[in-house]
Image (cartoon, rainbow, N blue to C red; front, top):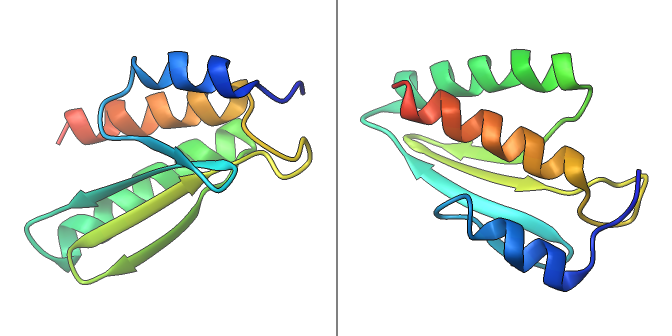
Length: 95
């Protein structure tokens, strides 16, 4: 998979609100009502990530979920990251 250029990444970020490009990854944070809601969304994301064979770096503390996406095999951001970011956004919007 081809690594995207900085300009390609910045252009694609305009299509997904709340995501930032930093340290060779795209990042976002979500806040939920409580831990149960955060964990429920994480479970749904996990199933989709497994289907895409692309897994996020993430952390969860109580009701906050921080997600970072990068394609380690390519050494940066690829189409796979934006596909998973879009999937995550769709899951969040469905909540």
